[in-house]
Image (cartoon, rainbow, N blue to C red; front, side, top):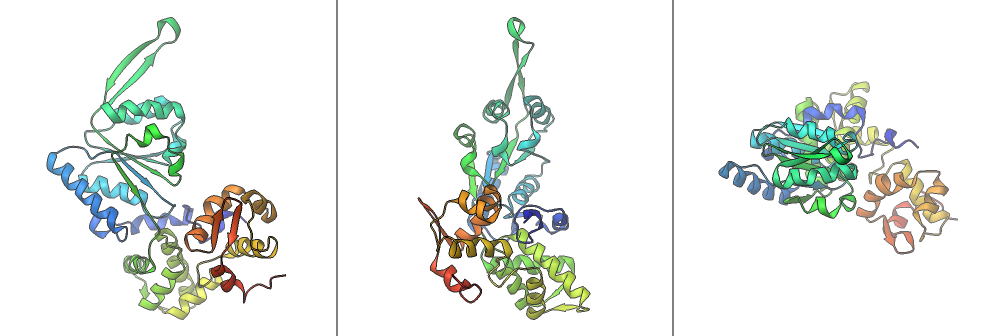
Length: 334
């Protein structure tokens, strides 16, 4: 299965461009992540009171939870520009220098997937973050000399889904580290109702709750499912979306009442039927399913682990009693 075709994949997809208009414009409009909002509000207020840049910020957590949105909110709250790039896009230190030297005082530089910065580029960033200076080497060999270039004060906002891959020297240079966690169904319902209002969708609260329950704790997925339900209702000639209509649309998309899709079911069924509930190594499981190890580890597992369908042990993955009871009516265990 191509993970890009999964409606419950938290990674960004082309159709998600519609969600750009759904992003909150300020911290007050940002729903969920209450503790992070409060800490960020204090940091923003303190920086503004001192007329200084904010400390560098590292946002980490699963995809689709609002890391990019928070970066944009920080820039708007501070009243400065945001320059966005990503780790894989910065291949050489010269690319980074071009971005840094064009920043204006107080600007935000947002680096998505910061854990994928090349090592040479990352080391080039250290002095920029600490001293707002960069050392650029001109010529080579005996004629090489270092030129120190002063930068305007700026704030680096880094985002990553793999916090463990951010090197210790880079992580230590961030003053603010925020971990974004999955949202509750109640928080997702608020987000869905807000998005429905922006998109002018007549959505009953019960329908919003049904979509939220299947959105896997992720706003990006919630908004994507809302769009699919809207399309289904339009084709059915329905103006107002109720819970039954939402349920029919989501089942057609292959998303069951627990938010599991076909690939999730295949993973759980394979562990039960082939490996007797586990434990099983991720490589063996991927080979049995004919899927990439990274797809299972980064796309499928986080939700299954968080929701208590799987547990990870030193000897491999094991199914839980919760998953056994849920899947029992659906699968015949041999």
